[in-house]
Length: 129
Image (cartoon, rainbow, N blue to C red; front, side):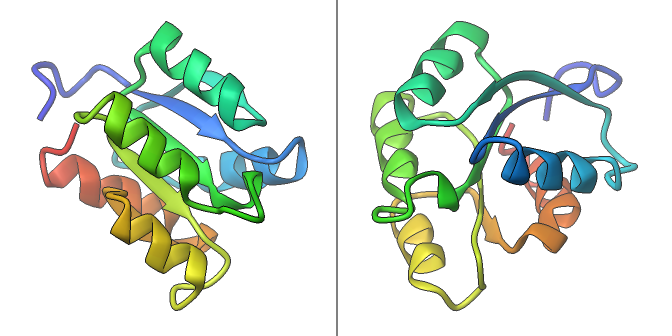
């Protein structure tokens, strides 16, 4: 758990341009238990890695549609390069290949977009951040 619970949760959003980012931000607006601060946004893997190391977010929210052919590759890259990173993967369906891959590569929480507020609550409650 963060030392000062009143501090907002610093979030990096990694999503396809506009459509994915907007949908994620709408869900973040439904998260009432946590104070959130979007510290950076990225629309591609390389930019996401740069933003991660530049901003040091508490949580990375990754829309697995960013890399449709390899939806969880960024999870694996971040977990190897920054083992303590906290990643919440947003997938098209709970029983999808993307969800299985994100779990296998070490995502801290995996679910569909509508579950995002609960996923963020669960990683915060698990002291993952």
